[in-house]
Length: 99
Length: 99
DNA sequence: GTCGTTATTCGATATTCATCGAACTATGAG
DNA sequence: CTCATAGTTCGATGAATATCGAATAACGAC
Image 1 (tube, chains in turn cyan, orange, red, purple):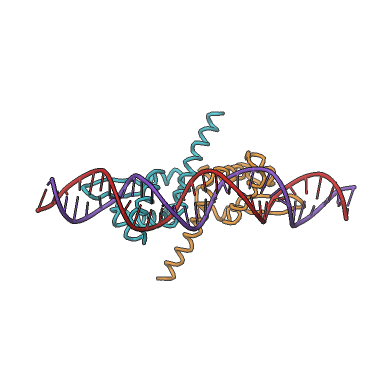
Image 2 (cartoon, protein in one colour):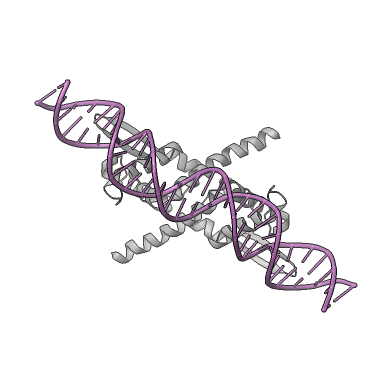
């Protein structure tokens, strides 16, 4: 019982974190771009679509990564971004397709 | 084209507002209580489950109402709260059932 | 009208968040 | 090793958010 309650609280902490991560226009745009591209993209590629400084872009990438909404893969100097479908499917089933 | 982009931006503004509204532990609890009850409940009834002052409770009710996640019905001195399913279904299909 | 109940609004405060430019790190090329 | 490219982290700052208690409002009962 306590375990169930704690379990739920823990999941809710994750939910809150994920919603916070999605509650921003720039991050929503990042997600849409990745979703529509249907492939991984470089940070620079995605960042070019947002009209903000690169430090801010990096800040948003990190926010998404920290809550498990995106993945990062490094190759030489460039990093590739992709959506982590499992997180969306678990916490927000159907959301990506509604974008 | 501009119209489509603006349309999308407008929807995104709503999405951001809704995610902000959901990005809070207390409001998530309010939603779960209402969802599990499967009926409308009085503000007092819901508020009793959260361990915070009534002004804060009211603040959270308003936050949910403003973005269209809940409905309010007044009857004499008491107000009844309920989930607005249409908003969840449109912006977060499948979310309520994942709770 | 006054009283009790239920809920909202107000003013203050502490915390968190988004943004920037500058400094820094990491990696490969020459 | 030096240079160039791609991203990240730091420090500062202004804006937004969550919280409280006190004051206010809405309503029915009496």
